[in-house]
Length: 230
Image (cartoon, rainbow, N blue to C red; front, side):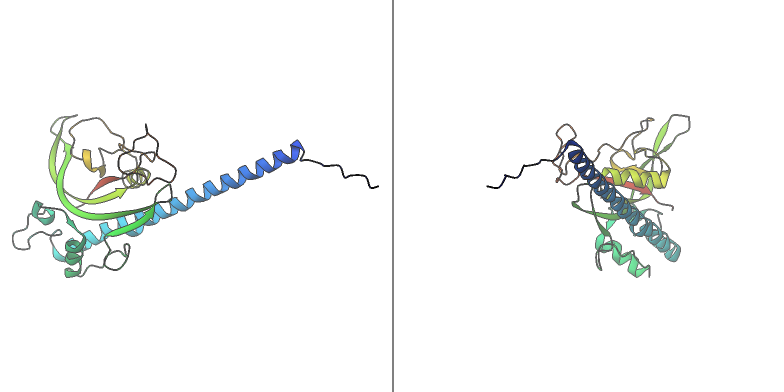
């Protein structure tokens, strides 16, 4: 009669090593995802946002007027101070001036750019140009007034992307001051610097940090203004 085999389990050391290996894999996956998203954001900044700034300047240098202004009675205001110039009207103005547009999302969608948010969900950002109210320094220190300025409107930016663009353009992240601002407070007269009013815990459609969204939820977005010159 044969002797039954003795059953053996895993030792504490073996289990510890397995747990450590799993932790390293999870950490590597997380770091890799962050690096990939950072590279995607950098590409959006250079090949879309910066590229549209250059297209705007090329239009001005080639025609002598800003987008949508009158060549005979120029106002120096985008669309003569009227509604934002977006999508088809913007593409038409660029093609009429012989300006090559950024590739954007696809042919016919040069004003749009698709990217993934921190939860891996798709977002679609777009650019427009408009003449808007803008806070500038007044006659005395700490006093601010509003002037009309030409800006690039960049919508549907996740909060982390907006802060990254702000830091790249202004050197710091401040939603109220500098050349890159959150649209809702770009003309505010308060002398106090302000944070971007959302972060990546906000769920698209208004779920705030006090009601955390699921990991797979689409991240909420903000709209930014970037001051154009002229």
